Length: 420
Image (cartoon, rainbow, N blue to C red; front, side, top):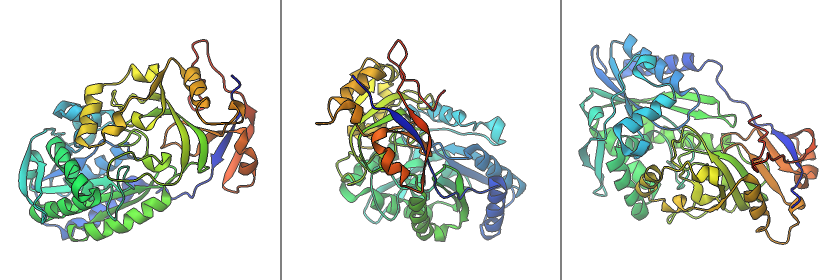
């Protein structure tokens, strides 16, 4: 089979990265601390999730130091629903992948799956909060604000979600995802988050958003009474800054790797245009006929959530799947569709050949193919020659070099342009 020739493109997004993130964290925390009821010697629980947030360890370490300087006794609580196999050690290990340990942060990492029921929402939903966080004098809620991968609303992924799914641990996450089928994800997160703010001693929230280059574009400390409204405003900004694929219609999207450190759904549904759950319709764009996924990230530890959005995967990927971790995550999140096993192919060549045979009346060498490392890495991508004419007419796209052939080794594995 003749494969399409490829050309490398660089997307030019707007730069919004903060030059000194640690200084900004110190400034923001220092701005709000005098308006909290935190006192010398108070214990403070800091929420940290499982996402691959830019400058994560630096932000958390700076936050810890700022609280210690204020006379507090901070500790870190892994807040990630069912991730890490829904075990305390598994969640602690995920933070270790990001360099977050007691030694590196200067504060204990206290991990438990135990929760305490602290109240009910106006809808009658039980509200669960991590038992260690409940015992603390105060809670500081830290998270990135961004569009969610499973639903749409005024509140999606951010501080309120951290108070709901994160602090709720496995028990809360499973319960809230079930409730989302009835009430909608945004409604559940908003109402549970508001209840946590009402009944728990949340000192402040620390929010960040990222630009299209996955750089920290904003860090803002928010007092509890402002969290709900400010998060809605920051979500609008975060959506504007998101990176996208260079074209909206293609025959094949080739993805080198997926994983929980890339997206909660392995690959970002906002990028690939496949949400695949029972309570949110797929967006009209982008329109992708087939998705091929080559591998898992090391950091995802076998949790292959998101493979259900693919049409073809490699045996290399399939052999790495930790089904217990993946099933726990997808059942808890009520996104079982994302754990469906696609067609498993012997190698990259086999996967591409099968994909090219299933895109309709299109000659393989003329297929419209986009190749990315992952859905977080969209600045430099490869596209097939069929896109070249359109790319040359776009000011936001830069063509790098001349067209090139896909190269396979003797085992049929692609030589990735991002990994060589």
